[in-house]
Amino acid sequence: MTDLNDYQDLVKLGDTNSALEESLAFHYRGNEDLKADIVHLRHKVSELARDLKRSITGQDQLQDYLQELIAYQELMRQLFPVRNTHQTLDVLLDVSGEVLTSPSSAVYLWSKDNTKYVHKRTRNLPSDLEHAIEHELFRGSILTRDELEPNVIPFFYGPQEGSLAVIPLVSGRRQIGVFISFMPTSHLNFFGHHVNLFAMFGRATAIALENAFLFEKVRELSIRDDLTSLFNSRYLRKYLAKACERANGKKPVTVLFMDVDNFKYVNDHYGHLVGSRVLMEVASVVQEYAGTHHCAARYGGDEFVLAAVGLNNQMASKLAEQLRFKIEVTDFNKGSDARINLTVSIGLASYPTNARNVDDLLNYADLAMYQSKSKGKNCITVWEILTH
Image (tube, rainbow, N blue to C red; front, top):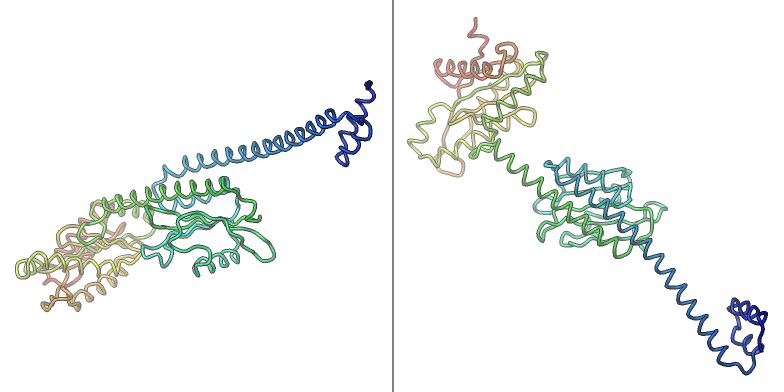
């Protein structure tokens, strides 16, 4: 009969992984059932230990996944109220550090023909790494324009082995851009739940960008003239109010108020469709001289306004003369045998030299324009001359 010490010895033997069956057979000859039960128990303990290890690892992965989902929810919360493309990209890069746990990221939005990017934002991306990523991106080795699913690929940054999370931003079945994040760890450390998170991240970002695009389009429609795409009079007044407020009397804000001479003849002789086409071409010339520094607007009918910030009457007169001459020597109604020549009458007024508010500024420039009409048209009149 086996006493307690024998069982203690058996437990010790059971703790030894090497040659357990031989040890049992040596000490307990003839008791094959006991030997088999102990070996079976040892295997069961090993299986339980392995399952426990897997469970702990799974819990860790689940914990990471939950944290990432919380960060993703924060991304959604911050992105969707934004109604501006540039702000959306800024918020995206700020929150992506938490969602993707990556310090270095870049986002590119493609042009409609997918040949270049029209918007770009980077965050904590060294210039040499940025250039390396863009070189591979535009040669198509990182991503092609027809790829719609996220991926994690190996990427070497100097001597450092890292990886890139490449997340296409997809609207419908079209790639509108790409989000790229550099992580200084091997791509082998990323699993299926990471890729799923990247996919959710990309979808949320694309939706937020589409919302921003739509909001900007609606806003543009509300402040643009339907025919010429110049700003409308409502926006012009808001622009002048802000410009005068910012100027604070320290720098001038000058209005060039212009009217196309004898435009009624164009409509009567060529028809309103031609008249509309000519107005679009005149608007294009006005926008050319407004550039990106000044505001060009269609005030109504065949009247246009160019608001120049930082130009006094003398400097604005030179700009007005260049614009007047350009219109005089241009053949309008392009693409037709019936070329049309036009002239414009222009009136100028300046804040704070001539006017003290936006209404007076527009009114005085308009009166100066009518004075140009009375002088024979195709000329420029400055309001301060009239006051003398």
